[in-house]
Length: 290
DNA sequence: AACGGCTCTGTCG
DNA sequence: CGACAGAGCCGTT
Image 1 (cartoon, rainbow, N blue to C red):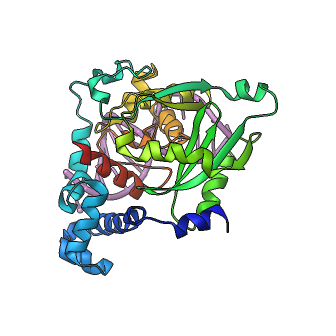
Image 2 (image 1 turned 90 degrees about the vertical axis):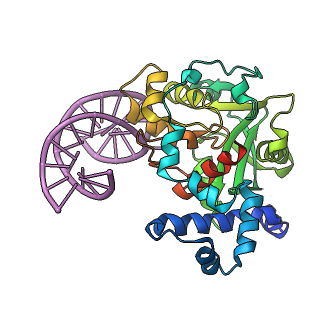
Image 3 (image 1 turned 135 degrees about the vertical axis):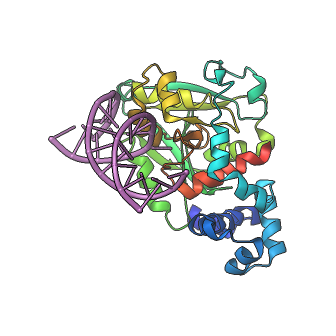
């Protein structure tokens, strides 16, 4: 039995929650005009209202109602609030605990341009595997220097997801190795592990421009969001927002490099490489911390 | 040369 | 208001 089959067999209740959440989010976004009640939603999913309530709360630490509220355009605009946005100037270097990041995941990153790692002999080795996450299956890829890739997939789409990632580093060598990636999964998706003494090591591989955009993303604290033009300004190219959007979309380490915290200036979510529904889910899930 | 996870402005309901 | 063009902007491919 291969690793993915094994994974499905061992799936935890927590791992299944996202399925439920995803369906609810989709129902809501399609039919938000109707303001569907908890009862109606539960019926559509073939669950009892109390059961749905429970699943939600376990998943997000938030009641369904509060969660749905957290996913509206209104709330997104609030995340964008302009005052006290000197956060883009604050340092986020290694383990330094700005209070704003106290409850966030600490990350140290190391940048690598394509030329740089290509030059280093015949490419680097990437170990990968799928793991259960709060947002569906997570494909995690690591090098000996740290986390290099994190992608999401619905179950059944693992192949496409893997292809999406591997083709980004054509001359790397890929080895399936759940043992190597599991600690990362535990560290990243278990909130209680976020504040551990050691920061998470991350390797950013991309063009110079992309690197600057991704580094800017790393400065956005949990529970906040910025617009694409904010990022453009931050990296010193205020008119390059469109290109910024493209670069954000190419972020290879989603969730850890919080590209889901980049929104349109008006609060619209506008896009997510792994699906808008998932972006909503992550944003809503994060709001459960506040 | 074309194409985006953008934004702004102008128009029409 | 909200939806929809049109027009600049800019790094990738």
